[in-house]
Amino acid sequence: MPDRRAFVSLATDFGAAYTGICAGVVHRIAPAATVLVLTDEITPFDVREGAMLLRQALPYLPVGVHTGIVDPGVGTPRRPVAIETGRGDVLVGPDNGLLVPAAEALGGIARAHVLEESAYRLPEVSASFHGRDVFAPAAAHLATGVDVAALGAPVEPLPLDVPPPAARDGELAAPVLYTDRYGSLVLGAGPDDLAAAFGPLPHGTVLALTWSDPDGREHSARVPFVETFGSVAIGEPLVWVDSSGWLGLAVNQGSAAAAFRVAGTLTLRVAD
Image (cartoon, rainbow, N blue to C red; front, top):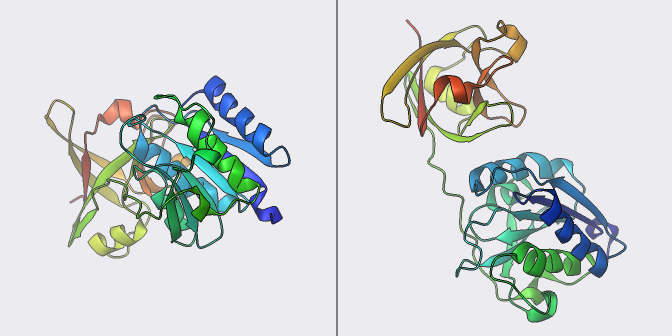
């Protein structure tokens, strides 16, 4: 197959050992492929976090077969899928929304098929390790030149379940997508949403934030909108646009997740 399909990446919430097993399965079936473990440290069961990581990372990787596995529904009727993108990549994983944001970032969904053909699975499929038995073999066979359509019937992938941001004149409500390694809260809104709510917003503008904690208590804080972490003192909070283009709430050299305990949605206004 073309060289562009000789690259396979793996991103999982499995940890090193189980992800290493998946990499080994790929190597056995497609020994000429380059196999990269992009990460094995996605927070367990956090489909949104995995989806955002894939969306951020895959445009910087070579065109190839990219396997994403965050699969709390493993063994249930949820479908395993392969999604071919406009850029030419194929994304392999569970049909739970995990792959769709990355596919959109790679030129959109060209076609998608269920992984149901037994020839492209391991001979025995467990109820709880489809990464090894279904996804890794499918990815490896795709890397050797198997066409996506050979894997199974065409399907329309399920979207990622994320509430949209709500931008009104003078107010932006943004869902928390996930908490990153540093405890920063990545929000489901970007600079366009910020502009829709506030118009041009210069760095240094102080924002009034309101939110509920997991116990339902209401909180508020005043936090500056700045360019980067070092724009505020160590231990101080900030709102910024992260490297993937999302808004985020962080604490310089600290954890916004611990400091703010935001549950669900964060509302931003320009402070008086």
